[in-house]
Length: 366
Image 1 (cartoon, rainbow, N blue to C red):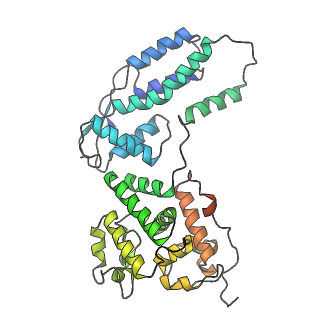
Image 2 (spheres, helix red, strand yellow):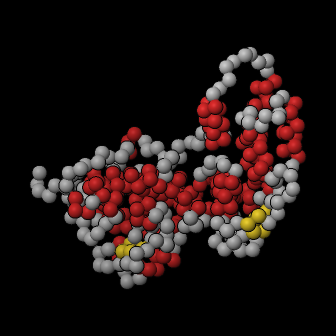
Image 3 (cartoon, one colour):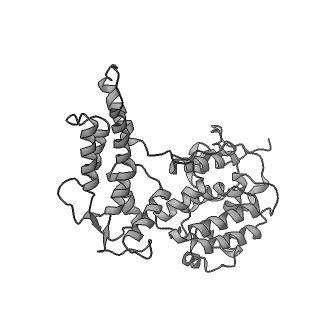
C-alpha cells in the first residue's frame, strides 16, 4: 500500500508490545510467573504507547491505512469497522474530510494503535492476571498441541463476534473502501435503495447482488465502453440509456455519482413496467428487469432464456455458456458471487443459494 513508518521510538512499539502481551496473556513468556509480574508488564505497555506516523503515498486512503494497522497487529476487521476507525483517525489528525488525504501528508496513528491494543491485548492480559490471582488446584498440564491451538485461538479471535450485517451494508462499505463512494454518501445511498425496494417490491440485498455482477458493487464509474454505471445503462434504441432520456449520450452517466444514478434506476424501473407496490419479486425477476426485461414473460425456471449476447459465466448453468441461462442459474450465479465476495455473509433462509442444476437448459415447451 506504500505506507512508510516515519517514526519508531526505542522500546516497545505498538506491534512489539502487542506481540509480547499476547505471549504473556497466553502464558508463553515464562519469566513472568505471577500476577505481580504481569502487573509490571502491563504497566510497561501502558507507559510506552506507540508513537508512529505514516507518510501518505499516492493512492492511499485513511481506510486503507486503518486496515493496514489492523493487519499488522493480527486483528480482524471489516469495511464498516475500518471506515469508523478512519473517521476517528481523521479527527485525531484534524482532517476535515476523511475521504481526502494528499500524497506526502503525515498521518499520526498513535491514537489508532493505542485503541486497537487497548481493546484487544490489554483485555486479554487483565483476564490472564485475574486467573493467576485465584487459588489454583492441581490439573494436568495441556499437551503441546493443545497449548498451541489455544494460543492461536486467542490471537485470532475477534474481541466480540461481528453481527451478520446485510449484504447491502457490506456492499456499500466495500464501495467506500474501493473509492467508488464517499463515506458521506453511504446513508443517502442506503436510504434511496431501501425506498426503491419498498416501492418496487424487491429485497435490498438482491439489488446489491445485481450490482456486484454489473458494476463490481455500486461502482458508478463501471463501463464496458457501451454500457455505463451501476446497472450498466446501455447505448442504443430501446436500451437502458434511452429509457432514462440519455440516448446518444450514455457516457454522461459516468459523470454522475451513485445517488444520482439511483434516481436514474428509479426512472428506468418505472419505464420498463416494474410492479409498483405489488407483491414482492424474486431475485431472478429483479435481475432480468435489468438484463433483458422482455424475457420476464418466460416464467419456467429450467427453460433456456432468449438472452442475446455473451453474459458473465456465473449466470449460465454450471457456469458453462453452452448450457444456457435459466431463472434458476441466474439465482444460483448471483448468490454464489455474493458469497464469494463476502465470505462472512450468511444469507437468510429465504435467500439461500439455489441448488445447482446440472442439466442443459430446456428449450422446448415442456
